[in-house]
Length: 424
Image 1 (spheres, rainbow, N blue to C red):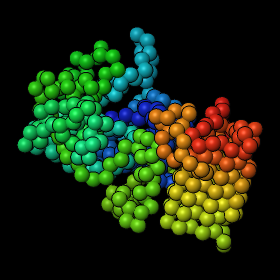
Image 2: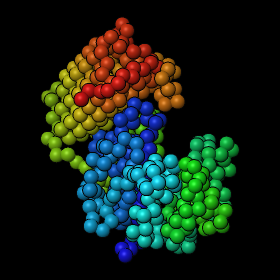
Image 3: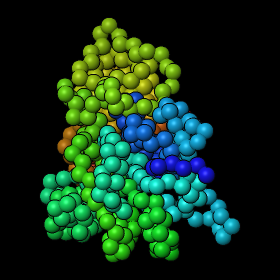
Image 4: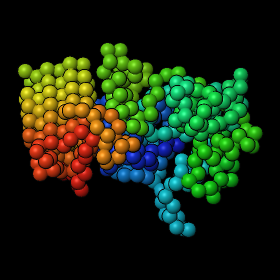
């Protein structure tokens, strides 16, 4: 019997619907970040940097790019004979097939995977947060408290606390109460969705709650363990942590990388963030191109001006084009004499010449005001925007658009175009 002290289960099946057109064709953990990475690189790198060498990645929604990206785990040194990284999609069983219906249900369906390592501890992670954390320190804390469950928690501004699961602790940091998104929070310690369970406790809870529909850690498993009188502790984390679940927070987290002293440093020697790198040629910056305070990916060709932006690998920016405060993901091509302000352009998008993105005033979005509620222009992957059009703020575009889609050459603020398919 192989025995591992701690294995990690990384939940990466979510659609990330609040990222709008960015996650139409790809799971949120596979969305590009910081010009070079994908969001899932952060928890995977944390695992290997913390000495956790057995990681099950639970996928469900649009998993193709995630699977290709993870492969057999080589970039993270997770290509192991014993352990390593394993992609765990839902599968058909003799009594029919079950989709993962909640975070805990997904883990329950992979009981056999965990059993084979007979771990003492199981670390549960989300695939969609940007942070660096040493899980080994958290495990030491778990052991020192003789805990059954340890929840990583961080202080948040009290006015934002109702967005999170809030924990209330005594003076030893033992959790006395747990409130899921309370209207009147009594504490500002928010659960980060990172848990260490003693395996016996986790197994017992999952088996007992097996029939609960959409079984979830925050709503069901933690309260169940609490009722059973188990020792649940809060591990307070004070580093950088960003849930990039909305378009604004995704945009902000990218922009924070280009500060003079970035709040989140990608360049630390002792805590590297690993990713699958395609071998592509170096950047080319033309003689009259201008670049200020930006991250520029490999294989990118710049003939225009880029300031305060994050540009992915293999992007082409035409002559006379100005890119400001924007994120452009890998493989996208922008024509000549265009202006892009506060735009998020997904992968493999083609934008014509003499195009302006981010014009005029902000208006409420007509397509999905819950998702699109800022002054950003969001363009889904493999979309096409023709020459000579203007696009207002708080807009969304997906698919191959033509000049007929822009009455009088304009997509007004708050408006949208959603077409089937995208450029190949």
